[in-house]
Length: 235
Image (cartoon, rainbow, N blue to C red):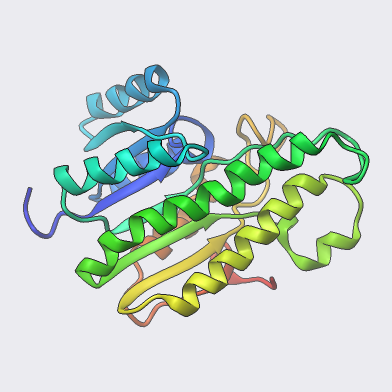
């Protein structure tokens, strides 16, 4: 592997936006590590992309399991010794049509475990690799549902809270990182995927354009910001 080969890791990369991110990063010259908690599906998807001559490898990682994250960090360190781009895409949408205080608390707990704590533990665990090289780009897949203005509107409370917390994490980490490390959040919009359903107006390909842009920004690029496309949006 030559020194200028850039390494990207995408969590939940086996379907929807995650799959499209893996594909587009590979088409843009990245060596991409696709992670998911389902080893069978992950291997199959990575193999399919390899057959299109894309540099994609699979690594099993369950973001809701800290030991699984630790093992993935060790593997990435041993195999590549670097990580240039980290995209926190793994997420769940478990809300039923219930008010937050009336829903089964386990729905909120499971949602936070993946959408918030999952991203937190992945960032916390992989950022030392970026700090060692003084460079890195982290992008969190967020949602307009995580905007503060959404909290007064009833519905999807568990999902909203998880993305609000993820947005807060994005800003906190942005204020703490040293060197040329950038962390931003992106609302991909309503995308036709397993989560978004077939009637969504945006294709995964349209949704990932801003991620590719943020993955490849220079040292003068934004840090600690929230985007839809290339437009800044309010927290």
